[in-house]
Image (cartoon, rainbow, N blue to C red; front, side, top):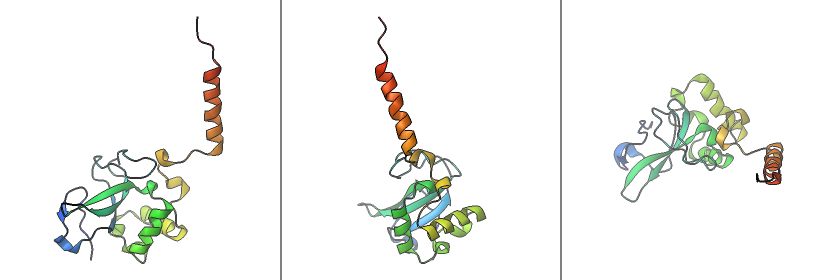
Length: 148
């Protein structure tokens, strides 16, 4: 059964047989949703960006999707996604994606992680070189003498 796109609006858990933990892929219809990704948590998901949602059940009995940028899906998220459906094509919303985005999802499915070029930039961990360069900048700032 295919879930309708409910984005951020609420639904009762009895409508359409939806259950917490279900996943959905879609393009963000607005820029209101915030990412729940570990490294960029709270950043906006821009209108038109590919996003992955997990249906959450709240204490009031309502179900809501919590969203993350596609590029913020960690290997653990992909692992849990694989437990929820047998093949990538079964993820709700998959067939509504552009062919190139379907390929991204299938590649991530096969490799168990998002391709490096698809990782959302604010969520990228700095490389060792970037860390070293940032450390040098801090040392330079500390070494400056205050003006008299």
